[in-house]
Image (cartoon, one colour):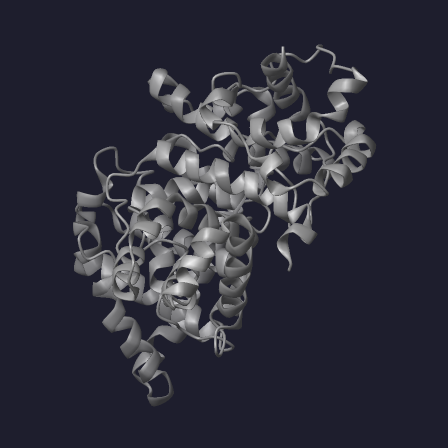
Length: 447
């Protein structure tokens, strides 16, 4: 009965226009606004309980009883349970059941590979980007797309979905073609105007550092070792740097181009993208991929630019927040670091600077970014909870190491090479649970 209630809650609440807003942004899926009063009242009681009483059971248990996020909308006329007793206990169940949705999505994709062949045109109506002159309708459509994208986006629709989620492509279909044409022309206008200045004295240091870093970007993936691809990356990064003088180019930004480039390349390539020879593509196609990668990366960086300004204050704050969070989540791990004098900055600076890209295979980063782009402030606030979940994932290995050097070697070389969608699904589910508990209960977060 509880499992059925959780499933119907997911389907029903995904259609509602409103949501309860936690401290760090809207949750996915949103909560039913009709529960706000009861939810807040009950949450205040729950927050007073010891942390142990809120420990979640296995996400797999919930995953078996929830439905695919790309299939919401089946039960339009079903009534949400009005039982007051179920409302009073819903808050913790909602957190666990909705986080578990991530897992169910992956299991269904494996069980039904034909779902991955879907396109935007054959998605459920409420997940479709449709023509409309109504701003309210466009806003509602955008919200629905974010809900559908949170548990992962099928490969075939990922390029257009990422353009939409980043705010680069308008939701109104009538405006898309002209917008893409205008923005691509604008980018190559920047190239024509500024790129030759890379050899001028005041830009030489920037260009030299970019030129050094590009060959180091994913060195084991043949795609990124091709001269033509490296030239594209150099142009993207140089133009971004001179248009953002407050930060300029910082090592690590080069990594952030790669997921966008691979996703937009996959729009034209059916085979293995990581080994594809880009000289087989036309000049027009390559120009489109380059411009779209530039604009979407720029949109991402707009939200985390304080990570890359002088002294990188954004990263300093996030590492400190991670330390506080871990001390609350797992005091044993936290004290283990203190015992062997391991500073969080020594391993987590890279996690924040590169958004875990150096810790995960590229395919996992792309799946992770499906959720980051659909989650409000996904690359900043939600990333904090992903890093916390990622660290605790290795608690056994961490506690087995009993010296400073062994701990740092482990944390800088975590064995994720064989990770795929299932592992990322588990990571996101746990991150969502942590966000639900701590972003909505800041007293649990602070000492």
